[in-house]
Amino acid sequence: MQATKQTSKKIYHEPRNQVGAKPPLFDRLIDDNPVEKIDPSHKLVLTTRQLIESIQREIGAILGTRLTAKNADYDDLIQNPLNFGLPSLFGFQDFQSFDASSPSQWGRICQLCQRAINAFEPRISDVQVKVDQFNKLKQSLEIQVTGTIRLEKFREVVHFPVMLDCSQSR
Image (cartoon, one colour):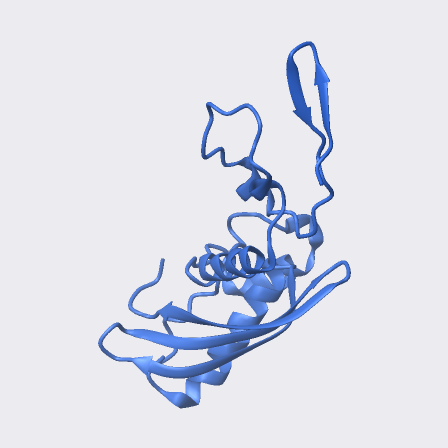
C-alpha cells in the first residue's frame, strides 16, 4: 500500500520501491509529455517485457546503422572503452562485399552482428546470431538473435528476430 502525506492542502504520494530495470539514458531523456512536471512511474523502471523490447529496439538500431570508421581502424578503436559511443564507431560494419544470399557468407555476417551487439548493447551477453533465410524480395537477411539479459540479480535468456537490410550501405 502506498503511503501519503498531507501538507498545506496538497497530498504527496510517497514513492514505492519498484522492481525492474532502469531505462537506457536516451530513453530517459526523451520527454513524451513536457507539460507534466513529474514523469510517470512506468518511465522510471522498465518491466521485463519493456526491457526486452528496449534491447530489441537497440539491437535493431545497431544493426541498422553502418559504421563510418574504416574497417582497418575499427578493430583497434572498438577495444578502447574511451571510444564507447563515438558516432563513427556505432553500428554494424558494412558488409556490401559479402553476398548475403549465399549461405557460405552467413557465418561471417553473423560474427559481425555478434561483435556489434557485444560492443554496443551491454545489457545482453552470450550473444548468438543465426541466419534463418535470405529474403530475396526484401533484399534482407532474416536473423535470430539469442542472448542472456544480465542485470544485477535478473537473468533471462531471450530470442528475437531481426531483419538485416542488405540492399544498401547506410
